[in-house]
Length: 134
Image (tube, rainbow, N blue to C red; front, side, top):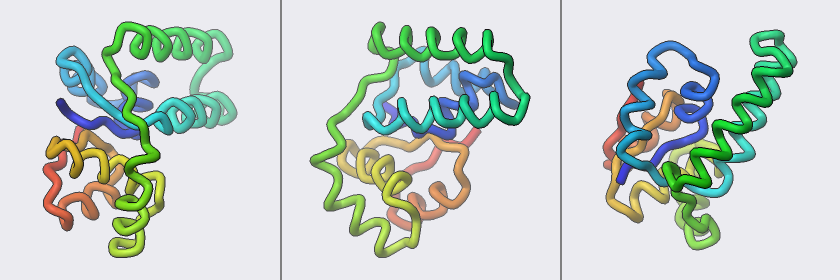
């Protein structure tokens, strides 16, 4: 099962360029960490503040995110077990703990990481994690 990060899920929900590719992965089922929900909602908030989406669109996106979670399209892994490994990844690569948590999950599961974050993708590749970029 593919690990999805917040940059990819936010791009899908905000219908950014190539979001259809992300939908294909979602249709197969993905896994992530609990943090993804907060990061995605923050990205939606930023899009709203910048005038990219309306208040009504924010509500639609929120409902879509809830549905993805309720229908187990996105499974959520407990990130507490990943904290030590994520810290080590951050220290060795210079990326944030947030980004390192997704990489730690991918390493733990021996799964590819779906991301739009180029810095995170580079770090993942350095750690021999397969990266799927959209």
